[in-house]
Image 1: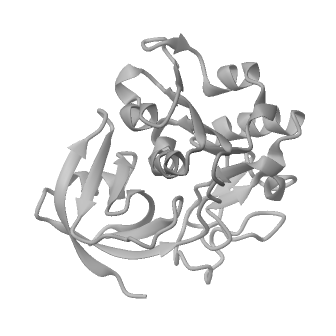
Image 2: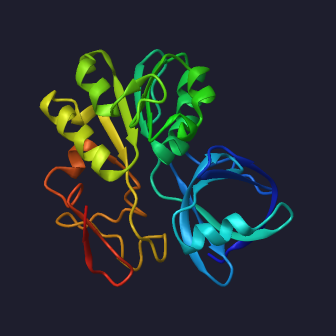
Length: 259
């Protein structure tokens, strides 16, 4: 699939480090949790989850995202997708817990809205480095109660999302979803494994992608061989047992990078 040109019609600075880019193309059939491959011409093509049907929310962390931040409204990128396996949507009336860390809130915000639309009870644990980096707080608040944690204590509770999770009775939730830094999710994994809740939990992972469609094998996970771009990026917790999850990933050359 060749990239389709997409014009940037609007940008919104969500936090000091994150920006939402709205396009003149909308992926109406995309599932929550799916991603698109974003071609920043002359630099790289990178995977980005959809934070709206027609937008991505990006944190400036490297060469490609830094270049993307330089593109103004009226500029363009190439888009391929949507790709991958999205979240399993809750059934009507089910109770849902979302655990979001940093820019991991991007795929979970539309999931919260989707869950809320089917009358599910939606509770969110939202974490960030500080109050200024809390992402999509208002979107989550419109869907249900939100527990806020910040690393420096500048908003609500000082600590991590796992501090809140440790105090909740997870048996009261029919479905649990999480996205954020992998070590955060690894700690979430440990708590939910202890509580016997992995079967009810879905994790959205990030790995280095080349093709984005499951052909090249660059994102295959040890020891299962699951392709994050095709079999994921959303995985049921039981699929991650005994895998490389929380231990290491690979760089563009295939070398292991320990977390």
